[in-house]
Image 1 (cartoon, rainbow, N blue to C red):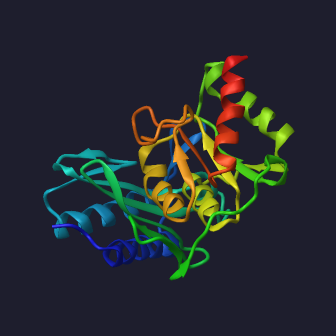
Image 2 (tube, rainbow, N blue to C red):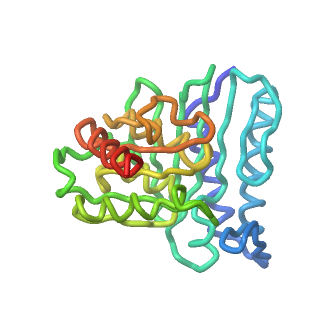
Length: 260
């Protein structure tokens, strides 16, 4: 039995309500000196896993806070109950709930919900992508100098080749601007909606990109890893997305940095 987009949208809305209405002490904990988790993360994730397990008890789940839940490998869920925890903990209203479903290794359904704006970014493979029911389309720019890009940085990276700063500096020199919003899932779906023109990250997690990657593809964009490989969920995940003209130009900038 497979889920529907309506089901995923409904549980995303419920998780968003938990985040918006959380009245208890956040009880902020540190995964690392700069990576946080709050009680709201845990409450949202518990709700999502309970809903999925009750409706689809045999399905496997990969969740940010509780890790991997065993199940039938052909049915795979990727859950980020609060993408943008640092923003959330500081009262910055840029965060989201991200839920993706894959069948036999291929993403089929994706929802990224921004509860602060009531925005549902949704996609079903072969059916296009929508924002609150209206069709999405990536931007049409053909030159990087016209593009607003976005990125994120690994949490606590130590190796210079992994910290993305050189990539960031290179894109600053060739793009119109580069942003760091603090929620990878929202960055990605903003590319799908044309608000942003491209996004890359060199060290990221499956739950951050699974739903958004499908949404960008269904909005006419191209998604690969940083080497141009189509399996962007393959471990260790990396991610580059943009429209079909800009995306290979972003890959070329990343390749030039590696060559240097």
